Structure formats: C-alpha cells, structure tokens
Length: 310
Ligand SMILES: [Zn+2]
Image (cartoon, rainbow, N blue to C red; front, side, top):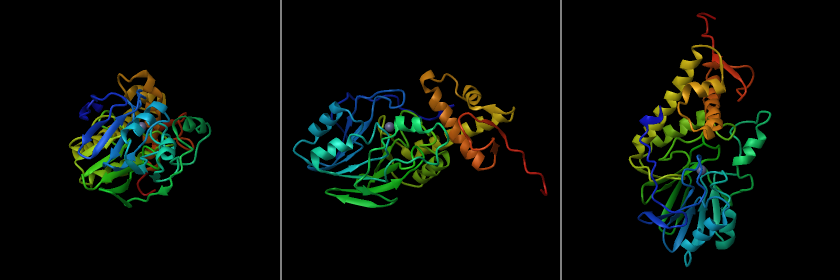
C-alpha cells in the first residue's frame, strides 16, 4: 500500500564523510543504521565560518569527533534539535561542551498523552530524557545567525516536541523525522499521536519549501507532492483498518496481519504501535470503539452508528 509514495531508498554517503548537500549546507551520516534509522542519522551544518548544527545525532564518539572535525576552525553558536529521540539529540551535550554553542528546541522530551500501564519502559528505550534546551522555541519563532535565518515550525506527531526548521535564505526545510525520503515516519504512542501528525502534514502542505533535508535518507525533492503522498498513505491505512473492522471486532496483531503485507518481522512491534496511533485517533473521533482507553492490548470494533433521533 505504501507503493504509491515515491520513496528514494538510496543514500550515497559513507559515515563520517562530510558532504555539501546544498550550497551552504553540509551533512554528515552517523554510523547507526537500523530498520528504523535507514543508513543512519544525518547531522547538518548550516553556513560557513560561523555555523549552526541541526541534530548532532546519537551519543556516538566517532560521530561527534567527525562532526567536530567538520567544523574545525569554525565557530558553532547554534545547535537546533528536531526532536528528543536517542538518534538525534544526545550528541548535543558533547558538541555543546566542545564548542560553547547554545541548544535550541521545542522543549524536553514528553509523551503526547498520559501513559497507560506498562508504557514507561518502551518510552525510555527510544527517548532522550536528559536533553533540556538552552533556548525553547515556539512555533513560528525566528532565530537569526550569521548568514542564516531559521524559522521553527512546530510539527508534533512523531514526537510531541518535534520541530522542523525552515532555512529561509535557501527556502529549504530541515524536516527531522516528520517527513523522510526513504520511508514513512513512525507514529508510535505514547511518544507520537496520529491526530497531531496529520495536522502537521497539513501544515507543511500549506508551506512553500520545495526541498526537505530529513533526519534519515536523501534530500526530498518535490516536497509538496511528497507530503500529499504521505497524507494519502495515512488516509489509506485508516481506510484499511476500518475495512477490516467492518468484518468484525479485532485486536492489534490481527489488524497488523491484515494490513501490512510482507512486513520486515523486526518492524512488527512498530507496525502495532502505528495501528494503535490510528485507533487512538479513530476512537477520539467516535468512529471506533474499545473498552476503556485505547491500548496496545485492546480489542476494537466499529462504533455503533448513532440512531436517528437518539
Ligand atoms: Zn530519527
């Protein structure tokens, strides 16, 4: 079903090798490949001489060393963080210590909603709970540096604190994990929320940047068209869930088997959480019903249509 999205599964980049991806923007790949991170996390360096870094990456000594080597002789004043997952923000501490730069982000890590029983541990596994930005940014806030103007674009959904960053002079968007060229983004409760995620896609659809530089994977060209594909993909997945529930009540593993054909077994857990994200949204909209709060262990059915006059 994801075949309709024009993914680019290539990334011609070696970890640790600096690559000028766009005039005035360098990128550096961390060596943390996985089914969730593709070839690894991309850190970006904006400008020359006096520079800003977007997403210093995982707490990996080799990556931090490569990043610092890339900016040797330059001054780093700003570190922008798209979100507080462990593959994006933890290296900020070491880069900040080495350069004296300030960190900018929407805020510390927080779940998108209160936790259900048993969710705390999973949250710990992916989240960087230690990161606290020096400067918190609100949606639309602008940070001006030497040769660059960065607008914070709040894009909650993948995480509650996800920020994309628009580089005004270049008319490009650092999209973090909200929109990526190689794959759909994971929206996994309680970190993520589908209603927020869809609203953030609609928000990007109203913007004009034609080029996105994502946290994983190559440059997203024709970004507006790509965002529309993302939106249609999610609506299609919602339709598949409703189609399966129309045949009768189901739990999440049953829905995953019905919807994801040929899924990498390592991604079964993530697929379950993605379905949960859709179900949370559908329950909130009164389209699907379950007992109590929507949870990974719950059973789901179509909500009874309200009787006329009731
Ligand atoms: Zn990531």
